[in-house]
Length: 275
Image (tube, rainbow, N blue to C red; front, side, top):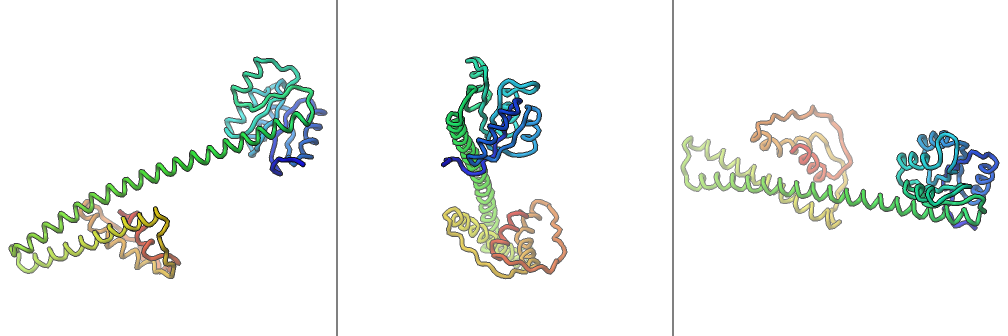
């Protein structure tokens, strides 16, 4: 019973057609999906067009030899597992094969009992390579998320400070009772405090939501949501920030669309995108 994962895809390359057919017959009996190629050029064409798990290639061939083929194959897929077979092996060619990424080096003639363990080792090595690629991608994604979180917290801290200073300034003026333009100034100052207070509350909620998301405890309340209403709220929150930076906002025309979503999260997304 083969210990290989079923349907592993392997390209087998040998310019000796009898040997090529025998190899493919053996491998197909052990759950491999084989693609037979009688030249390096044919194999390169298939590798360019499709994805494979393994490459088993003869070393000495007319045109593109085994070493050149492995280099080209690993340029397409760095994780492909490559095994060299040869009838005239030397230490020098073995070293060259390993340097370009071959995982094993088999001397002809060989039996299935020699070939299959070599391919199994190659499969295991490929799986390790793929896991490393996934881990590196996850590490990079985590680093990107941390950078975005730091940028968000930095921007939020700056806006919190600016809003608080604005509120304190207006509140101090209100407390002094000195209004050059009378009641209109008092109302304008009070309105500015209310707007800044609402934005501060929104920022604090976003920070709390971020903490919930990181702890995996962010609840979602899914239901029908009128997109136009949420857009109006988001633009109302962002408009003072845009005006302070002399940016003109152009809200889209109403669409009449209704979404199935969490209204609060949707508004947060829109506000974050707009800001």
